[in-house]
Image (cartoon, rainbow, N blue to C red):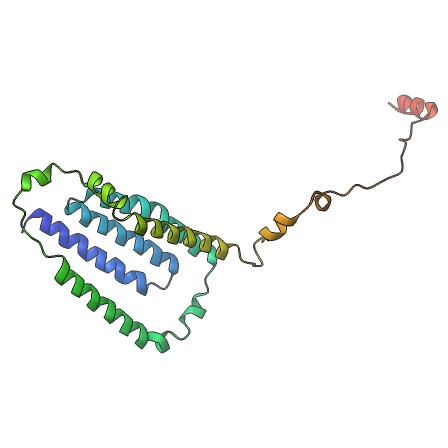
Length: 213
């Protein structure tokens, strides 16, 4: 067995274990950290497949941005674990059925759509740039799916902000609609007060103060 094959099995084993811990961890913060580990192992497997751009993109985008956002959201949501566990076994048969369907669909796609074929012109393929070719496809043939994906990520970011800004006892909550409708007269009130004059100490009091000093 070659070194590449050994590394593939090593990274795959860690990725499967981390992915299993994502759905079995009791603490949601630990689940997010295991998901970060899963993404790292997937990036290493893509590096073995010589897909350097996809590997670095996975680390920079998902691990460096999206998962950090998820981690902060999970930490700020203050999730009640006991309430989430209620009714777990009641919904388990349906969840297991959905999981089996997803596994069968993925197996069908992997077995039928990713068969390795030999390429006769290997020297010409070696001269191509993965990043350049991926950029051409992304911004020409797949431009509309790319825009849909960015819109979904934007909506997800808004949803995360809205969830963290909900009314709680230990947080300050503001209503943006009220902030927009506010007027200058609501911010400042002019109060009329009678003129006052500061009391001036008399000469006798000043002399007594100097004598005491």
